[in-house]
Length: 152
Image 1 (cartoon, rainbow, N blue to C red):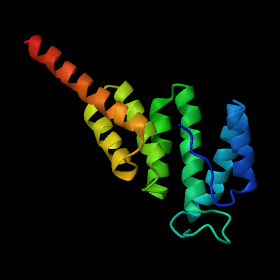
Image 2: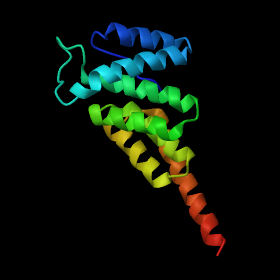
Image 3: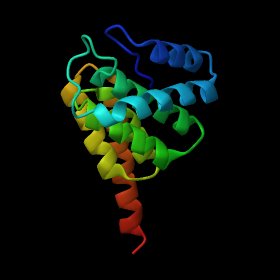
Image 4: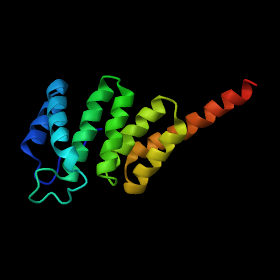
């Protein structure tokens, strides 16, 4: 799930989002990477978006969306790195927790996926996809435990 830049998104991010929406992922990734390269060093100093070309919401969105591109290429660990970076910049942004949780689930790391899906629902109780993913993760974890228990 891609996040969208908010609060007067910068030109590079707007252009990156347009490429992303058209499925032009190579171009979008290059623009997101350029924005991240420019803004990540200042991440600890940035606060509000007003007057700054680098605001936390935009930087977190750039990391999240670049992570989505990596996810589409099945570069799961690299995508998780970007989702984790997005969370580091904007801890209350639920989308990267959800995206990272999906990968953790796919890789069979059910306990870690559960933590991410629960965090999403703490931040946004109405996030239905996260609620469904949480339920499925619980079911699949229980099934895995049953299979392991039956194999001994």
